[in-house]
Image (cartoon, one colour):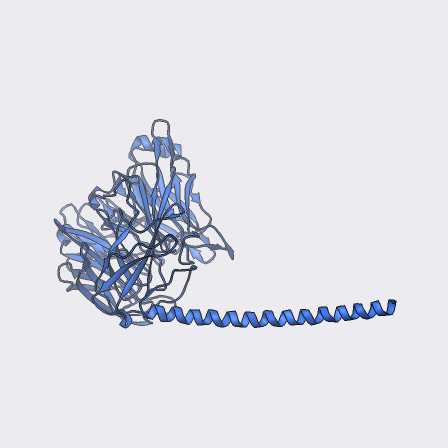
Length: 586
Protein backbone atom coordinates (compact mmCIF):
# COMPACT_ATOMS: atom_id res chain seq x y z
CA UNK A 1 0.00 0.00 0.00
CA UNK A 2 2.79 2.43 0.93
CA UNK A 3 4.58 1.60 -2.31
CA UNK A 4 1.34 2.09 -4.25
CA UNK A 5 0.81 5.51 -2.57
CA UNK A 6 4.37 6.51 -3.48
CA UNK A 7 3.66 5.53 -7.09
CA UNK A 8 0.46 7.55 -7.04
CA UNK A 9 2.33 10.52 -5.54
CA UNK A 10 5.01 10.22 -8.22
CA UNK A 11 2.29 9.97 -10.83
CA UNK A 12 0.52 12.98 -9.34
CA UNK A 13 3.76 14.95 -9.34
CA UNK A 14 4.32 13.94 -12.96
CA UNK A 15 0.82 15.07 -13.86
CA UNK A 16 1.40 18.42 -12.10
CA UNK A 17 4.64 18.96 -14.02
CA UNK A 18 2.93 18.02 -17.29
CA UNK A 19 0.02 20.40 -16.62
CA UNK A 20 2.41 23.22 -15.63
CA UNK A 21 4.37 22.85 -18.86
CA UNK A 22 1.13 22.79 -20.85
CA UNK A 23 -0.15 25.97 -19.12
CA UNK A 24 3.17 27.71 -19.74
CA UNK A 25 3.03 26.81 -23.44
CA UNK A 26 -0.54 28.11 -23.66
CA UNK A 27 0.51 31.41 -22.02
CA UNK A 28 3.33 31.84 -24.54
CA UNK A 29 0.99 31.12 -27.46
CA UNK A 30 -1.64 33.59 -26.15
CA UNK A 31 1.02 36.28 -25.63
CA UNK A 32 2.30 35.83 -29.20
CA UNK A 33 -1.24 36.00 -30.58
CA UNK A 34 -1.95 39.17 -28.51
CA UNK A 35 1.24 40.84 -29.75
CA UNK A 36 0.26 40.00 -33.31
CA UNK A 37 -3.19 41.51 -32.80
CA UNK A 38 -1.71 44.68 -31.23
CA UNK A 39 0.65 45.10 -34.18
CA UNK A 40 -2.26 44.62 -36.57
CA UNK A 41 -4.30 47.19 -34.63
CA UNK A 42 -1.43 49.67 -34.88
CA UNK A 43 -1.32 49.09 -38.61
CA UNK A 44 -5.10 49.58 -38.79
CA UNK A 45 -4.74 52.82 -36.80
CA UNK A 46 -2.09 54.09 -39.21
CA UNK A 47 -4.35 53.22 -42.14
CA UNK A 48 -7.27 55.02 -40.49
CA UNK A 49 -5.10 58.08 -39.90
CA UNK A 50 -4.04 58.13 -43.53
CA UNK A 51 -7.72 57.97 -44.51
CA UNK A 52 -8.56 60.99 -42.38
CA UNK A 53 -10.42 59.20 -39.57
CA UNK A 54 -9.36 59.40 -35.95
CA UNK A 55 -9.70 56.75 -33.26
CA UNK A 56 -10.30 57.92 -29.68
CA UNK A 57 -7.04 58.65 -27.90
CA UNK A 58 -6.31 55.90 -25.37
CA UNK A 59 -3.22 57.22 -23.60
CA UNK A 60 -0.74 60.07 -23.71
CA UNK A 61 1.71 59.91 -26.58
CA UNK A 62 5.06 61.55 -27.34
CA UNK A 63 6.00 60.89 -30.93
CA UNK A 64 7.27 62.78 -33.92
CA UNK A 65 4.61 64.32 -36.12
CA UNK A 66 4.45 63.78 -39.89
CA UNK A 67 4.82 67.05 -41.76
CA UNK A 68 1.73 67.91 -43.77
CA UNK A 69 1.78 70.13 -46.83
CA UNK A 70 1.05 73.80 -46.08
CA UNK A 71 -2.60 74.47 -45.30
CA UNK A 72 -3.30 78.19 -45.52
CA UNK A 73 -6.60 78.22 -43.65
CA UNK A 74 -8.88 75.65 -42.08
CA UNK A 75 -12.44 76.51 -41.11
CA UNK A 76 -14.37 74.46 -38.57
CA UNK A 77 -17.85 73.12 -39.42
CA UNK A 78 -20.26 71.32 -37.07
CA UNK A 79 -20.44 67.56 -36.60
CA UNK A 80 -22.96 65.22 -34.95
CA UNK A 81 -22.89 65.14 -31.16
CA UNK A 82 -20.85 62.19 -29.82
CA UNK A 83 -21.70 60.23 -26.74
CA UNK A 84 -19.92 60.83 -23.41
CA UNK A 85 -16.37 59.57 -23.24
CA UNK A 86 -15.61 59.89 -26.94
CA UNK A 87 -13.62 62.60 -28.62
CA UNK A 88 -15.66 65.48 -29.94
CA UNK A 89 -14.87 65.63 -33.65
CA UNK A 90 -15.15 68.93 -35.50
CA UNK A 91 -14.82 68.30 -39.23
CA UNK A 92 -12.31 70.67 -40.78
CA UNK A 93 -12.13 71.57 -44.44
CA UNK A 94 -8.84 72.85 -45.80
CA UNK A 95 -7.89 74.87 -48.87
CA UNK A 96 -5.10 72.38 -49.55
CA UNK A 97 -4.79 68.65 -49.18
CA UNK A 98 -2.32 67.82 -46.36
CA UNK A 99 -0.60 64.53 -47.12
CA UNK A 100 -3.14 63.88 -49.86
CA UNK A 101 -6.02 63.61 -47.39
CA UNK A 102 -9.46 64.85 -48.37
CA UNK A 103 -10.31 65.89 -44.83
CA UNK A 104 -8.39 67.18 -41.85
CA UNK A 105 -10.02 66.66 -38.46
CA UNK A 106 -9.52 68.36 -35.15
CA UNK A 107 -10.59 66.46 -32.07
CA UNK A 108 -11.50 68.47 -28.99
CA UNK A 109 -12.58 67.76 -25.44
CA UNK A 110 -13.84 70.08 -22.72
CA UNK A 111 -13.78 69.14 -19.04
CA UNK A 112 -15.43 71.10 -16.26
CA UNK A 113 -13.30 69.90 -13.35
CA UNK A 114 -13.31 66.11 -14.00
CA UNK A 115 -16.56 65.95 -15.98
CA UNK A 116 -16.36 65.51 -19.74
CA UNK A 117 -18.94 67.76 -21.36
CA UNK A 118 -21.10 66.94 -24.35
CA UNK A 119 -20.28 68.70 -27.60
CA UNK A 120 -21.62 72.25 -27.56
CA UNK A 121 -22.49 72.03 -23.87
CA UNK A 122 -19.83 74.45 -22.64
CA UNK A 123 -20.80 78.10 -22.36
CA UNK A 124 -19.01 80.55 -20.11
CA UNK A 125 -21.19 81.50 -17.15
CA UNK A 126 -19.53 84.91 -17.21
CA UNK A 127 -18.47 85.68 -20.80
CA UNK A 128 -14.88 86.77 -21.29
CA UNK A 129 -14.24 89.99 -23.21
CA UNK A 130 -10.71 91.39 -22.94
CA UNK A 131 -10.11 95.06 -23.67
CA UNK A 132 -7.26 96.43 -25.76
CA UNK A 133 -3.64 95.94 -24.82
CA UNK A 134 -3.54 99.45 -23.37
CA UNK A 135 -6.35 98.50 -20.99
CA UNK A 136 -4.91 95.22 -19.72
CA UNK A 137 -3.45 96.33 -16.39
CA UNK A 138 -4.32 98.90 -13.73
CA UNK A 139 -0.74 98.93 -12.45
CA UNK A 140 2.17 101.07 -13.57
CA UNK A 141 4.66 98.81 -15.32
CA UNK A 142 4.89 95.49 -17.16
CA UNK A 143 2.88 92.74 -15.45
CA UNK A 144 3.16 89.84 -17.92
CA UNK A 145 5.27 88.58 -20.82
CA UNK A 146 5.26 91.33 -23.46
CA UNK A 147 3.06 93.50 -21.31
CA UNK A 148 -0.54 92.76 -22.27
CA UNK A 149 -3.08 90.39 -23.78
CA UNK A 150 -1.93 91.63 -27.20
CA UNK A 151 1.71 90.72 -26.28
CA UNK A 152 2.67 93.95 -28.00
CA UNK A 153 4.96 95.73 -25.54
CA UNK A 154 7.78 95.13 -23.09
CA UNK A 155 8.48 98.75 -22.18
CA UNK A 156 6.67 101.25 -20.00
CA UNK A 157 7.10 105.01 -20.07
CA UNK A 158 9.74 107.02 -21.93
CA UNK A 159 13.53 106.73 -22.00
CA UNK A 160 13.91 110.54 -21.88
CA UNK A 161 16.23 112.17 -24.40
CA UNK A 162 17.82 110.66 -27.49
CA UNK A 163 19.99 107.75 -26.24
CA UNK A 164 23.67 107.21 -26.98
CA UNK A 165 24.74 104.73 -24.29
CA UNK A 166 23.71 101.53 -22.53
CA UNK A 167 25.28 101.53 -19.06
CA UNK A 168 25.15 98.70 -16.51
CA UNK A 169 24.26 100.33 -13.19
CA UNK A 170 23.61 97.31 -10.97
CA UNK A 171 23.97 93.54 -10.92
CA UNK A 172 22.23 90.92 -8.76
CA UNK A 173 23.55 87.37 -8.53
CA UNK A 174 21.35 84.28 -8.93
CA UNK A 175 22.23 80.59 -8.63
CA UNK A 176 21.82 77.33 -10.50
CA UNK A 177 20.37 73.83 -10.34
CA UNK A 178 22.13 70.99 -12.13
CA UNK A 179 23.17 72.39 -15.53
CA UNK A 180 20.52 75.14 -15.36
CA UNK A 181 22.03 78.49 -14.46
CA UNK A 182 20.89 82.10 -14.35
CA UNK A 183 17.94 83.15 -16.51
CA UNK A 184 16.62 81.04 -19.40
CA UNK A 185 14.09 81.34 -22.19
CA UNK A 186 11.68 83.19 -22.17
CA UNK A 187 12.90 84.74 -18.93
CA UNK A 188 11.28 88.18 -18.81
CA UNK A 189 10.76 90.00 -15.52
CA UNK A 190 7.71 91.88 -14.40
CA UNK A 191 8.33 95.42 -13.16
CA UNK A 192 5.64 97.04 -11.03
CA UNK A 193 5.32 100.35 -9.17
CA UNK A 194 3.03 99.30 -6.36
CA UNK A 195 0.43 101.58 -4.76
CA UNK A 196 1.73 102.56 -1.31
CA UNK A 197 -1.20 100.93 0.49
CA UNK A 198 -0.47 97.59 -1.22
CA UNK A 199 3.21 97.79 -0.28
CA UNK A 200 2.27 98.05 3.39
CA UNK A 201 0.39 94.73 3.50
CA UNK A 202 3.04 92.69 1.67
CA UNK A 203 6.08 90.92 3.13
CA UNK A 204 8.42 93.62 1.84
CA UNK A 205 11.38 94.58 4.03
CA UNK A 206 10.57 97.50 6.40
CA UNK A 207 13.22 99.81 4.88
CA UNK A 208 11.76 99.22 1.42
CA UNK A 209 8.21 99.79 2.66
CA UNK A 210 9.33 103.21 3.79
CA UNK A 211 10.61 104.10 0.31
CA UNK A 212 8.20 106.34 -1.67
CA UNK A 213 7.21 105.00 -5.10
CA UNK A 214 8.85 101.61 -4.67
CA UNK A 215 9.21 99.94 -8.07
CA UNK A 216 9.80 96.20 -7.80
CA UNK A 217 11.48 93.86 -10.28
CA UNK A 218 10.11 90.31 -10.02
CA UNK A 219 12.19 87.68 -11.82
CA UNK A 220 11.80 83.89 -12.03
CA UNK A 221 15.08 82.07 -12.69
CA UNK A 222 16.65 78.70 -13.43
CA UNK A 223 17.83 78.22 -9.85
CA UNK A 224 14.19 77.64 -8.92
CA UNK A 225 13.68 80.97 -7.20
CA UNK A 226 11.61 84.08 -7.75
CA UNK A 227 13.60 87.19 -6.86
CA UNK A 228 12.26 90.57 -5.76
CA UNK A 229 14.56 93.54 -6.41
CA UNK A 230 14.46 97.32 -6.20
CA UNK A 231 14.53 98.70 -9.75
CA UNK A 232 16.65 101.63 -8.63
CA UNK A 233 19.62 99.74 -7.24
CA UNK A 234 18.98 95.98 -7.63
CA UNK A 235 18.92 95.30 -3.89
CA UNK A 236 16.41 92.75 -2.53
CA UNK A 237 13.00 94.05 -1.50
CA UNK A 238 11.90 90.81 0.19
CA UNK A 239 12.96 87.19 0.57
CA UNK A 240 12.88 85.13 -2.64
CA UNK A 241 10.29 82.42 -3.18
CA UNK A 242 11.93 79.03 -3.71
CA UNK A 243 10.05 76.33 -5.62
CA UNK A 244 13.16 74.15 -5.82
CA UNK A 245 13.08 73.44 -9.58
CA UNK A 246 14.20 75.46 -12.62
CA UNK A 247 11.81 78.10 -14.00
CA UNK A 248 12.29 78.93 -17.69
CA UNK A 249 9.22 80.98 -18.49
CA UNK A 250 8.01 84.44 -17.57
CA UNK A 251 5.81 85.15 -14.59
CA UNK A 252 2.65 87.28 -14.37
CA UNK A 253 1.54 89.77 -11.73
CA UNK A 254 -2.21 90.15 -11.31
CA UNK A 255 -3.21 93.08 -13.56
CA UNK A 256 -5.86 94.32 -11.09
CA UNK A 257 -3.18 95.22 -8.58
CA UNK A 258 -4.16 92.30 -6.35
CA UNK A 259 -1.17 90.83 -4.48
CA UNK A 260 -1.21 87.65 -6.59
CA UNK A 261 1.62 86.16 -8.66
CA UNK A 262 1.33 83.43 -11.31
CA UNK A 263 4.36 81.38 -12.36
CA UNK A 264 4.88 78.33 -14.56
CA UNK A 265 7.74 75.86 -14.18
CA UNK A 266 9.88 74.48 -16.98
CA UNK A 267 11.86 71.48 -15.65
CA UNK A 268 10.54 68.39 -13.85
CA UNK A 269 13.78 66.84 -12.61
CA UNK A 270 16.33 67.91 -9.99
CA UNK A 271 19.48 65.93 -9.21
CA UNK A 272 18.14 62.97 -11.17
CA UNK A 273 14.80 62.85 -9.33
CA UNK A 274 11.33 63.76 -10.53
CA UNK A 275 9.77 66.76 -8.83
CA UNK A 276 6.36 68.41 -8.97
CA UNK A 277 5.86 70.53 -12.08
CA UNK A 278 3.07 72.95 -12.92
CA UNK A 279 1.82 76.52 -12.61
CA UNK A 280 1.58 78.07 -9.15
CA UNK A 281 -0.48 80.92 -7.80
CA UNK A 282 1.29 82.77 -4.97
CA UNK A 283 0.07 85.26 -2.42
CA UNK A 284 2.32 88.31 -2.52
CA UNK A 285 1.20 89.13 1.00
CA UNK A 286 3.17 86.26 2.56
CA UNK A 287 4.62 84.29 -0.39
CA UNK A 288 2.45 81.21 0.18
CA UNK A 289 1.18 78.93 -2.60
CA UNK A 290 -2.57 79.37 -3.02
CA UNK A 291 -3.07 76.99 -5.94
CA UNK A 292 -1.11 74.48 -8.05
CA UNK A 293 -2.03 73.46 -11.61
CA UNK A 294 -0.40 70.04 -11.88
CA UNK A 295 1.37 69.53 -15.22
CA UNK A 296 1.04 65.77 -14.76
CA UNK A 297 -2.64 66.20 -15.41
CA UNK A 298 -4.62 62.97 -15.72
CA UNK A 299 -6.38 64.50 -18.76
CA UNK A 300 -3.12 65.35 -20.56
CA UNK A 301 -2.59 63.91 -24.03
CA UNK A 302 1.16 64.49 -23.96
CA UNK A 303 3.73 63.28 -21.44
CA UNK A 304 5.60 66.56 -21.24
CA UNK A 305 4.49 68.77 -18.42
CA UNK A 306 6.33 72.09 -18.65
CA UNK A 307 4.73 75.51 -18.38
CA UNK A 308 7.00 77.95 -20.22
CA UNK A 309 3.95 80.05 -21.04
CA UNK A 310 3.13 83.28 -19.23
CA UNK A 311 -0.54 83.30 -18.16
CA UNK A 312 -3.09 86.09 -18.49
CA UNK A 313 -5.85 87.18 -16.11
CA UNK A 314 -9.25 88.46 -17.19
CA UNK A 315 -10.05 91.07 -14.55
CA UNK A 316 -13.81 91.22 -15.14
CA UNK A 317 -14.45 87.49 -14.78
CA UNK A 318 -11.62 86.76 -12.31
CA UNK A 319 -10.27 84.08 -14.68
CA UNK A 320 -6.71 82.81 -15.08
CA UNK A 321 -5.85 81.56 -18.58
CA UNK A 322 -2.81 79.36 -19.14
CA UNK A 323 -1.33 77.04 -21.78
CA UNK A 324 0.59 73.87 -20.99
CA UNK A 325 3.07 71.80 -22.95
CA UNK A 326 0.84 68.92 -21.87
CA UNK A 327 -1.50 70.23 -24.64
CA UNK A 328 -4.15 71.67 -22.32
CA UNK A 329 -5.66 75.14 -22.30
CA UNK A 330 -6.66 75.98 -18.72
CA UNK A 331 -9.40 78.41 -17.70
CA UNK A 332 -9.36 78.79 -13.93
CA UNK A 333 -12.14 80.75 -12.26
CA UNK A 334 -10.24 82.05 -9.23
CA UNK A 335 -13.13 83.21 -7.01
CA UNK A 336 -10.76 85.71 -5.41
CA UNK A 337 -11.50 87.29 -2.05
CA UNK A 338 -9.24 90.25 -1.38
CA UNK A 339 -9.50 92.53 1.65
CA UNK A 340 -6.82 95.22 1.36
CA UNK A 341 -7.74 96.72 4.74
CA UNK A 342 -7.35 93.42 6.59
CA UNK A 343 -4.41 92.46 4.40
CA UNK A 344 -5.86 89.09 3.36
CA UNK A 345 -6.36 87.31 0.06
CA UNK A 346 -7.70 83.86 -0.86
CA UNK A 347 -8.88 81.99 -3.93
CA UNK A 348 -11.22 79.04 -4.49
CA UNK A 349 -10.37 77.81 -8.01
CA UNK A 350 -12.72 76.07 -10.45
CA UNK A 351 -10.99 74.63 -13.52
CA UNK A 352 -12.11 74.11 -17.10
CA UNK A 353 -9.81 72.30 -19.54
CA UNK A 354 -9.77 72.44 -23.34
CA UNK A 355 -7.86 69.66 -25.13
CA UNK A 356 -7.34 69.12 -28.84
CA UNK A 357 -5.46 67.11 -31.44
CA UNK A 358 -5.61 66.73 -35.19
CA UNK A 359 -5.38 63.61 -37.29
CA UNK A 360 -2.10 64.89 -38.70
CA UNK A 361 -0.22 66.15 -35.65
CA UNK A 362 1.28 63.69 -33.20
CA UNK A 363 3.12 66.22 -31.01
CA UNK A 364 0.67 68.63 -29.45
CA UNK A 365 1.63 70.98 -26.65
CA UNK A 366 2.22 74.71 -26.36
CA UNK A 367 5.35 76.64 -25.39
CA UNK A 368 4.22 80.10 -26.47
CA UNK A 369 1.89 82.30 -24.44
CA UNK A 370 -1.75 83.06 -25.17
CA UNK A 371 -2.48 86.26 -27.08
CA UNK A 372 -6.10 87.37 -26.74
CA UNK A 373 -8.31 89.74 -28.71
CA UNK A 374 -11.75 90.25 -27.18
CA UNK A 375 -12.86 86.64 -26.51
CA UNK A 376 -10.60 85.01 -29.10
CA UNK A 377 -7.38 83.33 -27.96
CA UNK A 378 -4.49 82.74 -30.38
CA UNK A 379 -1.68 80.24 -29.93
CA UNK A 380 0.55 77.83 -31.85
CA UNK A 381 1.55 74.31 -30.93
CA UNK A 382 4.63 72.12 -31.33
CA UNK A 383 3.13 70.54 -34.45
CA UNK A 384 2.87 73.91 -36.19
CA UNK A 385 -0.87 74.56 -35.99
CA UNK A 386 -2.12 78.07 -35.26
CA UNK A 387 -5.48 78.12 -33.56
CA UNK A 388 -8.12 80.77 -32.93
CA UNK A 389 -10.19 79.61 -29.95
CA UNK A 390 -13.47 81.14 -28.79
CA UNK A 391 -13.00 81.34 -25.02
CA UNK A 392 -16.73 81.53 -24.31
CA UNK A 393 -17.67 78.32 -26.13
CA UNK A 394 -14.26 76.59 -26.30
CA UNK A 395 -14.66 75.88 -29.99
CA UNK A 396 -11.96 76.50 -32.60
CA UNK A 397 -12.92 79.28 -35.00
CA UNK A 398 -10.13 78.68 -37.48
CA UNK A 399 -6.88 76.79 -37.72
CA UNK A 400 -3.89 77.36 -40.00
CA UNK A 401 -0.84 75.18 -40.53
CA UNK A 402 2.42 77.15 -40.34
CA UNK A 403 4.77 74.42 -41.52
CA UNK A 404 6.64 73.70 -38.26
CA UNK A 405 6.85 74.06 -34.50
CA UNK A 406 5.82 77.45 -33.07
CA UNK A 407 7.50 78.58 -29.84
CA UNK A 408 7.38 82.32 -30.46
CA UNK A 409 4.35 84.06 -28.96
CA UNK A 410 1.96 85.72 -31.41
CA UNK A 411 1.44 89.47 -31.41
CA UNK A 412 -1.93 91.12 -32.00
CA UNK A 413 -2.53 94.52 -33.59
CA UNK A 414 -5.92 96.18 -33.91
CA UNK A 415 -5.46 98.10 -37.14
CA UNK A 416 -8.98 99.54 -37.47
CA UNK A 417 -12.56 98.69 -36.52
CA UNK A 418 -13.10 94.98 -37.29
CA UNK A 419 -9.59 94.79 -38.72
CA UNK A 420 -7.26 92.81 -36.50
CA UNK A 421 -3.93 91.21 -37.39
CA UNK A 422 -1.70 88.62 -35.77
CA UNK A 423 2.02 88.22 -36.49
CA UNK A 424 3.81 84.91 -36.02
CA UNK A 425 6.88 82.89 -37.04
CA UNK A 426 7.98 79.27 -36.82
CA UNK A 427 11.25 77.37 -36.45
CA UNK A 428 13.21 74.46 -37.88
CA UNK A 429 12.28 71.38 -35.93
CA UNK A 430 10.09 68.81 -37.65
CA UNK A 431 11.41 69.57 -41.14
CA UNK A 432 15.07 68.79 -40.61
CA UNK A 433 18.29 70.71 -40.02
CA UNK A 434 18.13 73.35 -42.74
CA UNK A 435 15.60 75.21 -44.85
CA UNK A 436 13.33 78.21 -44.85
CA UNK A 437 11.30 79.26 -41.83
CA UNK A 438 8.18 81.37 -42.27
CA UNK A 439 7.29 84.77 -40.83
CA UNK A 440 3.63 85.55 -41.46
CA UNK A 441 0.75 87.94 -40.92
CA UNK A 442 -2.83 86.67 -40.61
CA UNK A 443 -6.23 88.28 -40.45
CA UNK A 444 -7.07 87.41 -36.85
CA UNK A 445 -10.82 87.31 -37.46
CA UNK A 446 -10.91 85.17 -40.61
CA UNK A 447 -7.63 83.26 -40.57
CA UNK A 448 -6.65 84.53 -44.01
CA UNK A 449 -2.88 84.68 -44.48
CA UNK A 450 -2.04 88.22 -45.59
CA UNK A 451 1.66 87.80 -46.34
CA UNK A 452 4.65 85.56 -45.72
CA UNK A 453 8.40 86.22 -45.53
CA UNK A 454 10.87 83.33 -45.58
CA UNK A 455 14.33 83.13 -43.99
CA UNK A 456 16.92 80.40 -44.56
CA UNK A 457 18.17 78.86 -41.31
CA UNK A 458 20.21 75.93 -40.08
CA UNK A 459 20.19 73.86 -36.92
CA UNK A 460 23.53 73.50 -35.12
CA UNK A 461 23.76 70.70 -32.58
CA UNK A 462 20.84 71.00 -30.19
CA UNK A 463 20.06 74.59 -31.19
CA UNK A 464 17.30 74.89 -33.76
CA UNK A 465 17.15 77.69 -36.27
CA UNK A 466 14.18 80.01 -36.56
CA UNK A 467 11.97 82.13 -34.33
CA UNK A 468 12.16 81.73 -30.57
CA UNK A 469 11.98 85.45 -29.83
CA UNK A 470 8.58 87.14 -29.85
CA UNK A 471 8.36 89.97 -32.42
CA UNK A 472 8.40 93.62 -31.36
CA UNK A 473 5.48 95.65 -32.70
CA UNK A 474 6.43 99.15 -33.74
CA UNK A 475 4.33 102.06 -32.51
CA UNK A 476 4.56 105.83 -32.86
CA UNK A 477 7.36 106.69 -35.29
CA UNK A 478 7.86 102.94 -35.85
CA UNK A 479 4.19 102.26 -36.52
CA UNK A 480 4.80 100.91 -40.03
CA UNK A 481 7.20 98.18 -38.90
CA UNK A 482 7.47 94.94 -36.99
CA UNK A 483 10.76 93.38 -35.84
CA UNK A 484 11.66 89.67 -35.79
CA UNK A 485 14.86 88.25 -34.29
CA UNK A 486 15.65 84.96 -36.03
CA UNK A 487 18.20 82.45 -34.74
CA UNK A 488 20.76 80.45 -36.76
CA UNK A 489 20.48 82.40 -39.99
CA UNK A 490 23.35 82.49 -42.49
CA UNK A 491 24.64 85.47 -40.49
CA UNK A 492 24.40 83.54 -37.20
CA UNK A 493 21.43 85.57 -36.05
CA UNK A 494 19.53 88.40 -37.72
CA UNK A 495 17.04 91.10 -36.74
CA UNK A 496 14.55 91.75 -39.56
CA UNK A 497 12.52 94.95 -39.83
CA UNK A 498 9.50 94.24 -42.01
CA UNK A 499 6.71 96.44 -43.31
CA UNK A 500 3.51 95.55 -41.49
CA UNK A 501 1.27 96.03 -44.51
CA UNK A 502 3.30 94.17 -47.13
CA UNK A 503 5.84 91.99 -45.33
CA UNK A 504 8.58 93.59 -47.39
CA UNK A 505 12.06 93.90 -45.87
CA UNK A 506 12.92 97.43 -44.75
CA UNK A 507 16.30 96.57 -43.23
CA UNK A 508 18.10 93.76 -41.45
CA UNK A 509 20.90 93.75 -38.87
CA UNK A 510 23.47 90.96 -38.58
CA UNK A 511 23.66 90.02 -34.87
CA UNK A 512 26.78 87.80 -35.39
CA UNK A 513 25.43 85.22 -32.92
CA UNK A 514 21.99 83.69 -32.58
CA UNK A 515 19.41 85.06 -30.18
CA UNK A 516 16.36 83.78 -28.31
CA UNK A 517 15.95 87.08 -26.48
CA UNK A 518 12.96 89.07 -27.74
CA UNK A 519 13.59 92.58 -29.12
CA UNK A 520 11.96 95.53 -27.39
CA UNK A 521 10.95 98.93 -28.79
CA UNK A 522 11.58 102.04 -26.69
CA UNK A 523 10.75 105.69 -27.36
CA UNK A 524 12.29 109.00 -26.33
CA UNK A 525 10.36 112.10 -25.25
CA UNK A 526 10.04 113.26 -28.86
CA UNK A 527 8.39 109.97 -29.87
CA UNK A 528 11.37 108.68 -31.84
CA UNK A 529 11.60 104.90 -31.65
CA UNK A 530 14.54 102.56 -31.06
CA UNK A 531 14.97 98.79 -30.93
CA UNK A 532 17.04 96.93 -28.35
CA UNK A 533 18.03 93.31 -28.99
CA UNK A 534 20.45 90.83 -27.40
CA UNK A 535 22.35 87.78 -28.64
CA UNK A 536 23.92 84.61 -27.27
CA UNK A 537 27.40 86.20 -27.25
CA UNK A 538 26.24 88.61 -24.55
CA UNK A 539 25.93 91.80 -26.59
CA UNK A 540 22.90 94.02 -26.11
CA UNK A 541 22.48 96.40 -29.06
CA UNK A 542 20.61 99.70 -29.33
CA UNK A 543 19.47 100.40 -32.90
CA UNK A 544 17.71 103.23 -34.68
CA UNK A 545 14.27 101.75 -35.30
CA UNK A 546 13.79 103.33 -38.73
CA UNK A 547 17.19 102.67 -40.26
CA UNK A 548 18.68 99.80 -38.25
CA UNK A 549 21.81 101.88 -37.61
CA UNK A 550 23.78 100.69 -34.57
CA UNK A 551 23.86 103.45 -31.95
CA UNK A 552 25.70 101.56 -29.20
CA UNK A 553 26.07 98.18 -27.53
CA UNK A 554 27.04 96.77 -24.16
CA UNK A 555 28.63 93.44 -23.23
CA UNK A 556 26.61 91.84 -20.43
CA UNK A 557 29.13 89.00 -20.11
CA UNK A 558 26.98 86.00 -20.99
CA UNK A 559 24.26 84.54 -23.21
CA UNK A 560 20.89 86.29 -23.01
CA UNK A 561 18.16 83.68 -23.49
CA UNK A 562 15.76 85.78 -21.49
CA UNK A 563 14.03 88.91 -22.73
CA UNK A 564 14.40 92.51 -21.54
CA UNK A 565 11.83 94.62 -19.74
CA UNK A 566 12.05 98.42 -19.71
CA UNK A 567 10.60 100.82 -17.13
CA UNK A 568 11.23 104.45 -18.12
CA UNK A 569 14.98 104.60 -18.80
CA UNK A 570 15.98 101.39 -16.98
CA UNK A 571 16.23 98.05 -18.75
CA UNK A 572 16.32 94.77 -16.80
CA UNK A 573 17.72 91.58 -18.33
CA UNK A 574 18.86 88.24 -16.92
CA UNK A 575 21.71 86.14 -18.32
CA UNK A 576 22.79 82.50 -18.25
CA UNK A 577 25.86 83.80 -16.40
CA UNK A 578 23.94 83.95 -13.11
CA UNK A 579 23.21 87.66 -13.27
CA UNK A 580 20.23 89.98 -13.35
CA UNK A 581 21.33 93.38 -14.63
CA UNK A 582 19.93 96.88 -14.42
CA UNK A 583 20.98 98.92 -17.47
CA UNK A 584 20.41 102.64 -18.00
CA UNK A 585 19.43 103.80 -21.48
CA UNK A 586 21.04 107.24 -21.56
